Picture 1: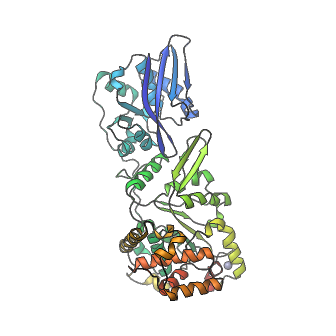
Picture 2: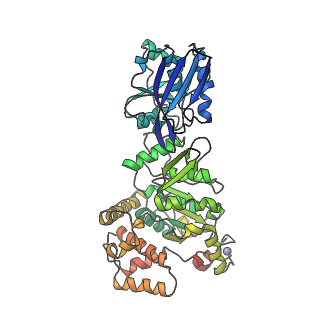
Length: 504
Ligand SMILES: [Zn+2]
């Protein structure tokens, strides 16, 4: 009177195998569940009993003990319902044990016996290994992306039992397509003027440099940032798998092809909570925006409006490419390697129309320092975005489309990877002399900037990395010439100068 049914749970973006052991014995009727179930798991007993009786199957008046193994790990969510129900039916002889050999079950049960989709089906099905995965039909796409073995779907517990017990044919696995979310990335050809900001996007994509846009409202910062994912290389290999698992675990559905292959763009609102941004949660441990941006762009508009604790939490992912989140008895490490683009007003008054700002340099520096704190130092690129002028707006054609720029970006990334094994933004400071030496003129200019205190020691390294990316985009080999250093300096505007009033 014992059944053992494979299933899975999800923590963060990774599935963990769970074996549902059901033991049925004589004694006081009742159901005990052990093995660290969470709240949603504990509620399974009521859902499963209702589902079984609604399916015209019998619920035993016996003592039922359910153990979720391994017992050391907390089990979250409702995805174990289906395995628990099948376990009870096998342990009571209503389904032959032979019929469920080599099968794994992932799904929630409705009180009427319907089999419902769960969040995180892709990592859960992956955790089933080579077993045949049985899931809700709305989870079919996620299951097929992740499955090592065959995928079967079930709409209703009664139907599932007929397939298992009576050998009725399994329902067709159809991709219902209800979660089609293939957002088209907007094209750079639509952007008029903005030569400096366009170059900054190209450099950011080619070298992996984090970017700060300063500009008054209406200058087009969001429009520019949203075009950056189109310049990034498509996700391949492990990055594509990681991004796909993260999306599934976040309950976001998958793109039509199943796998996430284009660089994501995430733009969380400044009112976002810490959990929404970095992940976590009291019920199920879910990925946050930094992980959803993995392999793509995290855009923080109105940087100064984000809470300091939220911005501080970005330090770990920016340094390590992962974020660690923990709650009672569960912790997870989630991938979170993204390109950060932040946007801000240039000064306390917001900039306004050209020439209208009266903020002095000291108050502008204070404003930018305060709002972005620990992030500001990590921005290799800091540029001022101004409203395009009328000539640009009425000009016909001429703006380069995304595809052309992305071609240059891909070639530049390849140069960097072949030369040093990493993209330029991740080149350690102590390798710069070896990988990106300077001509005498370029070295003299940087020395002069340092002496005049227009550049900090940290900024010195960042400018050299950006200059290297600019050279890569032109197909030039080091040593870096003075022109590239001048361009790089222009893409790292001093804080006090990040205002329309100075340019005006
Ligand atoms: Zn101002």
